[in-house]
Length: 163
Image (cartoon, rainbow, N blue to C red; front, side, top):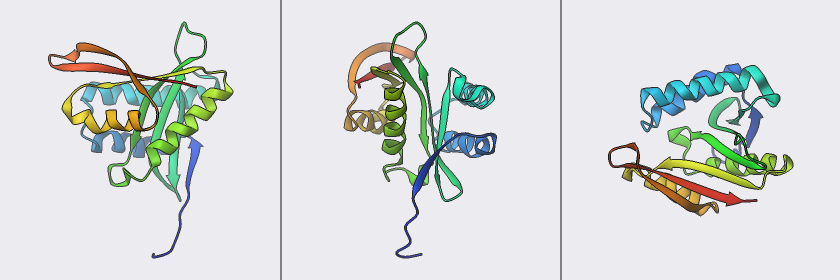
């Protein structure tokens, strides 16, 4: 409907979001079956343990539709370092600022938990070029490259942001 503004809202993920989140991850065509299985396990753990769990899971909704997911947690054995474990936006809703919005939401929560550093890992595969640009655009810098980490010819790129 022309002129209608729908706000994006972030909510703690619930079991009702699981189907949408898993579909988003699948529709990106970026993740291997084992990665999808791990995402599902992380999602389930976050739902089961809630705010006290190791994984903090939030979704972006437009109206009642789940269109993005972020999952983060404190990095084990660190003081104030957090990992962004998963970030996905529904393919048809990418490039609307939803990923940036979710990252800022997570950054704000991490800051309230005395976070001092956020770490994101991604692939060096050429198809992840836009993902890497996204992290750089929102203030992350490349801290390391682990050659052929994921597979032959597929490096792990580690991005960091101090908060």
